[in-house]
Image (cartoon, rainbow, N blue to C red; front, side, top):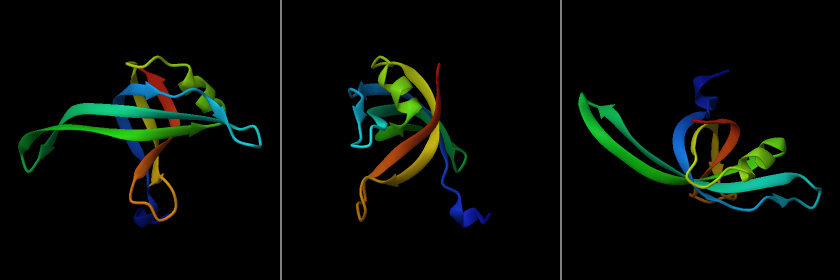
Length: 101
C-alpha cells in the first residue's frame, strides 16, 4: 500500500452532541455526533493550543454503541475522513473504533 492512500485519524475528543440513532431504508443503524477536541501540539519546537470540532458518523453495530453515550463523554476514536457528500469541502470523521476514557 502506498503512503498516498493512507487516511486514518486517531483523536481524543468529547462528544458534545449525540443525535438519536437512525436507520437507513435497508435497516442499517447510523449514529451522528459532534466531537470537540482541545489539546496541545508541538510545531517547529513551539507549543501550540489546538481546539476544533468535527462531525462524526458511525454505521452498523458501532452506531448503536455510540448513540447510547451521554453528551460530555470523553472518547478515543479511530476512523477515516471523507467529504460530507460528494463534491463537498466539509469533512466528516467516519468512526471505525472507539473507547470511552
